Amino acid sequence: MLFLKEKVDKETGLSFNALLPNLYRDGGDSVAWHSDKEHRIGKNPNIAFLTFGQTRPFRFRHKTDKSLPQIEIPLHHGTLLLISGTTNTYWEHHIPKSAKDMLPRINLTFRKVITRKMF
Image 1: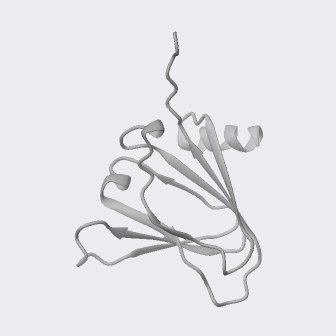
Image 2 (image 1 turned 90 degrees about the vertical axis):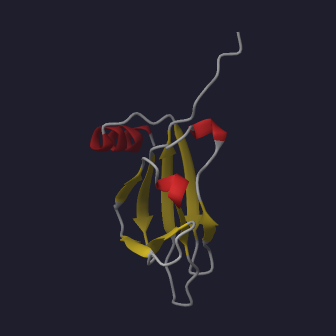
Image 3 (image 1 turned 45 degrees about the horizontal axis):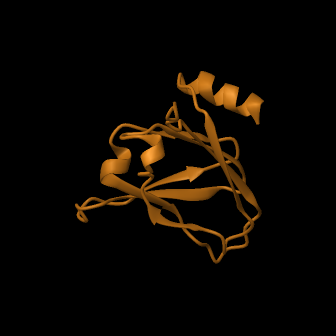
């Protein structure tokens, strides 16, 4: 994992310190619409998604302007997607379920977690 983190850091020019792995076993596994607004990753966080396995669509929708079309990015094996800036302020994202036969997919989500000193 450290090797992959270093490659992601180099490719993005950023330095991540947290990893959230997700396994999508088949088309029945998904993640609901959401924005990554965790207080531990700060305002306007940089989040890098690294995908292995089955291609799945990664969709965005605007939170308030429903006249804007959804954006769909296919995440193929080996895709690195970086979201940053105000993306999480104005947009939600998700991975939908699929009725198609799907092979497993692993998504590695890299973030910079803000740590506070206790003393």
